[in-house]
Image (cartoon, rainbow, N blue to C red; front, side):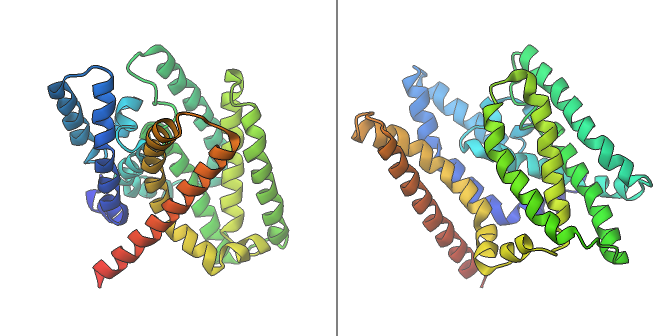
Amino acid sequence: MSIDFAKAKIRKLYLLYVVTMLAMVLMLLAQGWLHGKSLLMNLGTVAVKLAICAPLVQSAFGTTHLSHAFNGVCWFFSTLALIYLVSPWLMKRIAGWHHVWRAVAVLPVVIVVLYVVFGMADAQVSFLDDFAYGSPYMRVWFVVYGMVLARIIFAWRTNGTIPEWMSSAEISVAIFCIAWFFLRNTFVEMGSASALLRFVDVLLCGGLLFILSFERGRVSRLLERPGFLRLGHLAMYVYLIHYPLRMYWEPIVLKRVMGNQMSDALGAISVIIIVAVTMALAVAWDRWQIARRR
């Protein structure tokens, strides 16, 4: 394991992670009180979850009670941190693989099989419900797949063997990914289709990353514009900040202030306000971070 490698990767986001986690303590205490927990039990629950979430190990337990504690989207940050611990070891192992194209073909199948196996564990073990989706044991295989693709990309770029059709393929794959984003939601409730959905997800994501990495087409040029680069820089800030805002907005504004009178118009207004406040806070945090480093 490489603790230094993991620290270097998570350093940029860790302070904001702690801030958003502490911002949700009041919400967690309020929920415990509404469910009839005593003050001692409430404080004990918060203390235990803080002890597990502070070192970013919560996703390893495979249960949403821990992986989604405080800031519910931070299971992803925890998963990344744990995968970073083993990433240098993985990169060394993958560097020694001779049949990388075979690995590209086999790994999506391996991911789907593991997804099904871990899903069965979630269904049969009462303690588990986040083993197949948010755990590092599942997500690490996506990283392995990305590392294998990176080896091929590096070899192609080094040798200059980049096909002419790569530029037009960017648009085609991007359109397929956008269409799939909307289409797959019609199959989400079909339990029997979940493994197939995951298979298509892996193939499209891998294909998009592979093609965009050569920076040959209009999609690449669009994403290289300053506005998109800026948005990419702020993306994880936005990811960490939006969830606490949404969690406080619903019980306080929609239920208490608005009397739980939900409508399409109010829903749209809520989204606009949350997005606007999230972006403002993300920009402010980024500027504060820059000023703090000077």
